[in-house]
Every structure is written in C-alpha cells, then in structure tokens.
Length: 55
Image (cartoon, rainbow, N blue to C red; front, side, top):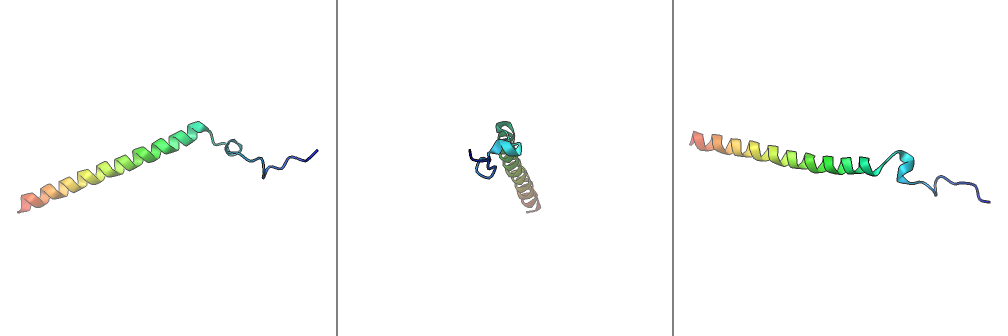
C-alpha cells in the first residue's frame, strides 16, 4: 500500500477555500471595478462641467 502523498492529493478545500469564498472574491472584483469606473465617470464629468463654466 502506498503512503498518502499530500503533494499529489492537494485540492482547493485543503487550503480552506470554498466555493462561497471564491464567489465572494469574484463578486468583490466585479463590484470594485464597477465602483472605480463610476467614480472615474463622476470625477470626469465634474471636471468637464468646471471647465465649461470657466469658458
């Protein structure tokens, strides 16, 4: 009988990673990128309005 080799039989659950935590990371990345884009749009529009008011 071969001894158990953890290097061969290593899976994501061995590190405490679950499908729920993977889903949370993916959702976090999506929300974070959306928030960055929304903030960039708000700042861009604000600067554009300020430039038009100065002219």
